Amino acid sequence: MGKKPKAKAGPAEDNDAPVASAEPWICLECEQENTGEDLLCSACEVARPIVADPRFDGFVVGLVKSCEPVPAKDKLKKLEVDVGDAELLKIVTNAPNVKEGARVVVAKVGALVEGEPLKKANVGGCPSEGMICDAPMLGWIGGGAGAAVLLPESFAVGGPPPDARPRTDGK
View 1 (cartoon, rainbow, N blue to C red):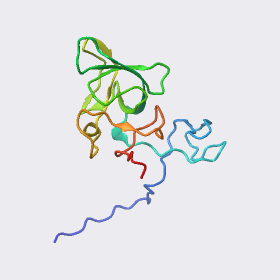
View 2 (cartoon, rainbow, N blue to C red):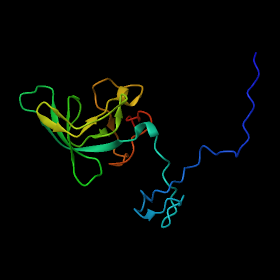
View 3 (spheres, rainbow, N blue to C red):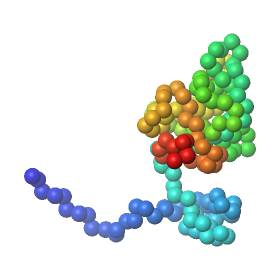
View 4 (cartoon, rainbow, N blue to C red):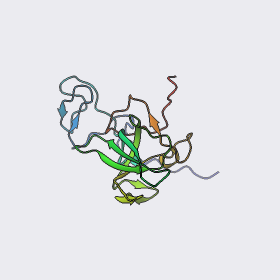
């Protein structure tokens, strides 16, 4: 057996505490804007949301507002998705289980997908401004490749995706 490395001297860190940043944040409970230093909402005292998993930077929860087939393309669907921005995103997908009203995980333009930044593209002759994610793309266990991850209504539109596949059986 080898020697144990010496512990580095320094302040103890609490890894479970939310990290304060200089960015202002909006309370999900009462919609009060708070300063970046506030750990509790100044209006309702709800705790600041914990910073989302950094591997999901550029990924958000979206709500499919419309879903139409792409003309002359058997498997493609043209979607309009609400991701909490002023305008709906136009996304083309081949995920067979996507339908109007579904909550999905969306990779926005600039998000790293398989190590590459996602770019706007034309898919089947239609503009696509993002990508609907499947479980393997997110590093989740369960769910098939090519099938969109469908989320329960408890996930806020425009919010961060969960760090693991959520249960949808109510347990």
